Image 1 (cartoon, rainbow, N blue to C red):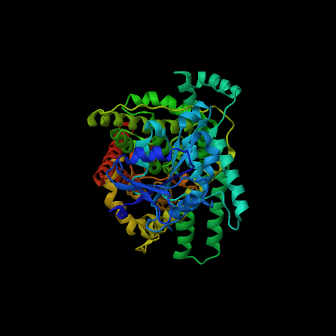
Image 2: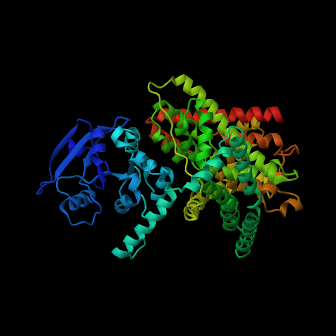
Image 3: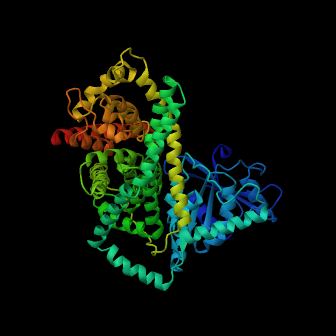
Length: 627
């Protein structure tokens, strides 16, 4: 039976607390013996994850490196490499380190990551580290190393639940050893590890001097003030969104001009026909209409990185904890919800550290209402349309964007409060504690890597999902072909026109025609697709000369009209569309992760249906009240 269970290898330096953690997790379900051919003790035990999955833990000999010559270090290396006789290859490595000596212990950690196996880091003795004045940031440490990091005190059992939750199925993906390059010899690898450890400790484990602490305390008197703190937080958000609209306008104009030039260049070098239209309108027009928002995506994550690296984000979490406690959540739910502003998937996965099962379920349920970066292209397309005639548009657009994010967040809190009441109180009271790091200069290497990863993810998505859907949409809009030369009749005759006509009754009460409805449906695969879908759907309706000269999607939408001549996109219809995108769960990968994390397909389906119906009703009320 023992061989059939997935094995978790517990690895670490001597005196890191391995034995204490092993005993605490496995309890009385332990077996001891010796490894084949040597007198080194072999300890293993069984345990259950919080979700009922039975696993086996193997306490391997303590070691400082996998390249050592001593028998115990050789055994440790053979086990981790799956070469030890009578021992299965471990499914996951649980690496325990002494947080008070992090720089020394991380050398083994990097070697373990280089093995390319799933791994979790147990950050032990955090009490000693903090008493020594070391300011730890497990979230930044996790991002630097690319693995889950769980702070704990093994001697008092603190963090055991979080450790078990991190070990649950499915196991995390292996991290990438970003500090290594091809062709390095052993000495170069060692130097690369040392440099990366120093950089990591500067980011995630700081030793503040007295002057820095004193300055941080003075700043916190303002930033954590019950009134001034919230005013500052609001101003920070307004400044962030103002920058997105104002500073990004120049590179966005360049990208838009590049798109127009590329369409004209490709179109002029090919004979007219379907292939010409596919390349210029379907591919370049569809993908380009999304890539034009890349400067704003970069600016968003640049500011998020600055706030995290400077130490201010922890203050925002402190301010939010008081509000969240009123809706039945704690500060432990803040970090998963904060992660969901970037993407709901890591946000849902980050709930594993929440001890309360009920609070964890509620946090998972409302996490998709934190407006993720995938919604940003939709907002950035619609908000300027809403305020097209306003003076000082950048500040007004920033106010609207702040209101959009606030509406999603406040709605999530209201639903969370209702759900917490229905689920009932926890049997055991859980408390939230968080160390506020001192303010310091941003770590630019961390910020640029963070921004680069997010930007590349956005571009890669545009080159895969959005490209495929853009081609599909072009084909549906083009075939079957009509003999008429009128653009409106061509669209009506096509497969997309027929689909739009069939679903139009669902979206008319929201103030939208079937074409916008079809674009909404395609965005259930990925929200960003809405922009490329609209680019493909609406450019065919331009009939007057002035409009035909405008290449911008936003300009095309401004002149779109209903059949009776009424403007298509009014204040009421635009607000309705924005409200729908705030609330709808248009991300099937998120639903898959929710089903996995909760262990219930019904919970994921219920969440999807609730949020979709809620989005339709909210959009319906918005349109009917404003029109």
